[in-house]
Length: 149
Image (cartoon, rainbow, N blue to C red; front, side, top):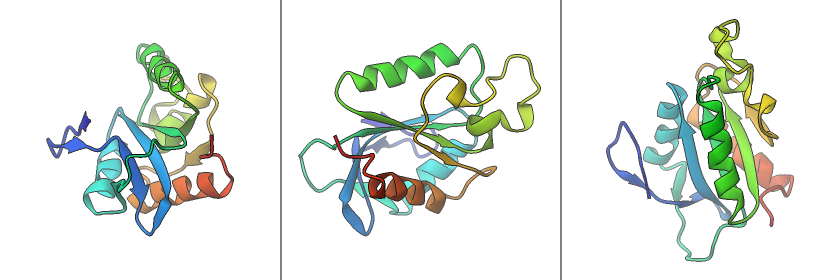
C-alpha cells in the first residue's frame, strides 16, 4: 500500500480503470510535484478503482509526475528497476515537468524530461494534465497491448 500525501490514506497497489475492469495495473505513483494531486484525484474520484481480483496485474505502470532533478534522477531509476524485478514495467510521463522539464527546463539541475533516463511508453502533456488524461493514457497503453506481459 502506498500513502498519498494529500489524502493521508492508503492507495491500493492494483487498480482497474473504471469502466474497463479488464485493464488492471500495478500502481506506482511517483509524484514529485503538483501533478501528483491530479493523480490522487483520479483515484479519489473513482476513475481508477481498487481491482476486484487478486490476480497479479499484467504490468506495473510507473507514473512519473513532476519535476525530476538531477539529484532525484537516481531514485526514479531505482524505483523503475525495482518494479522491473517483479515483471514488465511501463513508464508514463505525466505533465510538462516530467515530459520536458516544464517551466524549469533551463535550470541546470533539472532533467530535461524523464526520457533522458528511462524508456517512456506514454506521455501526458499539460500543466497540470487532467485526471481523465491519465486514465486515457492507461487505456491507450492497453489498446496498444503494452500492458500485456
